[in-house]
Image (cartoon, rainbow, N blue to C red; front, side, top):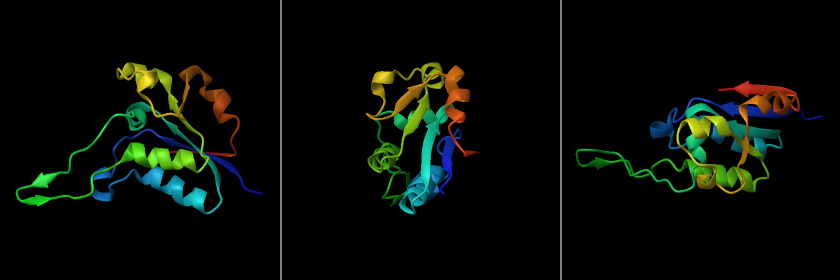
Length: 128
């Protein structure tokens, strides 16, 4: 029987320049593709991943330009399309001036004081 996992992304923009995605979001895609039962929680600065209207211009060093900028909202949208529940901590978003109306459709806001109830529904919790 598959164990239900919750992956928590707390550190934002880790390796996004080198890898063009967040390693944990990428790992969730790979695990889901292999049949894992998992969900994702964005907290801390990582709540910014869920803001709908954002873009990253390619990074340039002199004449050399990195061609593939990170697309974290696209990565989350594709994860949601795989029927992976994705949550974000509402309190963290508010502390960063992010309004809930700016978030991607399908992301579910949860109050910080409700996290223990959310955590109780998982066999494994991984905080990255």
